[in-house]
Figure 1 (cartoon, rainbow, N blue to C red):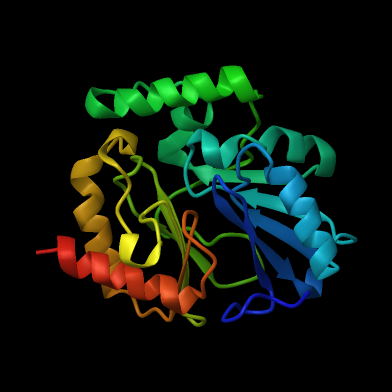
Figure 2: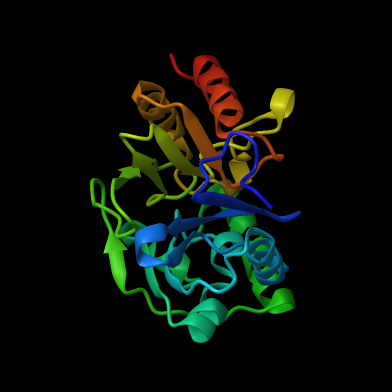
Length: 235
């Protein structure tokens, strides 16, 4: 199996019905790193994807989280236990990662959904080895920098590679062609800052975006949807 059309050969999406997460291969280290970990079914999808890419012999050295919502963190503890990988997460999402974030207003519905998911599907706490702040360099190969994109959560991060002009955009938006949209109001703990984050991403020199929710498409296609949303919502 080759990388999907439009994807760099060292980046592989793991598509599941719930959420997409990503694997980065760092060839000189002969190692893999994950951007988020998905939800129920994510680990089996990861194993299947790694076998198809012939990457299943490579160690997973690290896990980087875009934010602390349950559908991105559910598998962290099990993967750390299996692989010994370190974990890096946005500092401002510490309570999200611990499952203790005090949701308010409309986002209380998100808190209820997460609590239900933890009871039904399971959740184990996990250690965070590195806390990420705006502008930090992410220890995955070289060139990935943290960009604070609050709104969905207070600490929500994107990861930008200036030279490659790529952005892991987390849950800034969902990319479904004509049905692309911002996260629903009930899922946003800091919604008044979403417009700022859209404006910021629109100012970046990008050739591709890699969101965590969307149908299988190239990074350039996802970026097109992001720019359309930015034109719609940014004044």
